[in-house]
Length: 383
Ligand SMILES: [Zn+2]
View 1 (cartoon, rainbow, N blue to C red):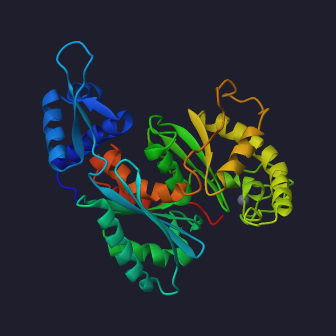
View 2: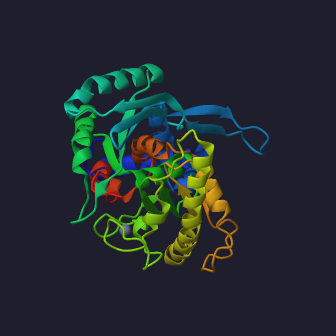
View 3: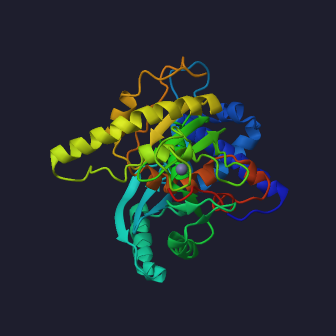
């Protein structure tokens, strides 16, 4: 996305205000859009006209059953564009493509990462063709990459050297509208775009998988902290006498919640059940303690647990958390929720990054700071 003078920056911002309102409300009339956005009816007419011409929004028809002149409903055109998402984890690169509504149009699969990153090219060419075919004539909005194992030490975050060459290669291949994010932040953006937080802007996300991380979302935007590392919930100390963590502290949440040692993939039921029971017996008290700390620290509207761990495991974990200790949020009807997006949430989140860049009004849009620049400098440590 090219950014120009302040008038065009304002135009880009106002377009995203309109797209954001439509994304959150399914469909709205022009009058409702004006009321929700604070823009004049005339400005809304021009913006909606431009967006329709570009195929990003469409008219559904006249709304019936209401008093007065029936109003024409406007909605996001699901097939007005598509996004590609990649999730690089261990030696694998998972990929998919979604349309503007978040419907998966290419449930891609997995590439075994080649030793030489440039050997990715034929794979990327094939994925590009596959997605373009599935999307018909609609254009690619952008590409997102979620990466685990980013290094936090020493300030603003760079992808881990093992992953950096691959992310850079994908960025070069697809061009400037390619966004890089750590997998916990990407998963939180999947909740914002497609999941439980679609209409709720303030929430805390706890990512559980082989790594344990998190994200803080305020006003629909990721809170990154002074050096870009905010949300490192995996290193909240829940037992100062606990096992030593790779970060150097003892008893970090990571040492209890990481699923790396879980034998969930074994075919032996008895071994799998024993492994899960052992994991739960340590994870439940550790998470109880962390939930109270997170609630007292952030007073979130929602606290969502997700990640690459199996959904059933997360549901069991959360179901057995009660009774939780008191906090400033003790009266919340549901103190901890499990994401409904499943273990591919970071991958979905990767695809959500360019979609949110298009559809979310961000202060960055008014200050010439591109989202790709903002997001490429943040992430989580190697855990
Ligand atoms: Zn730690």
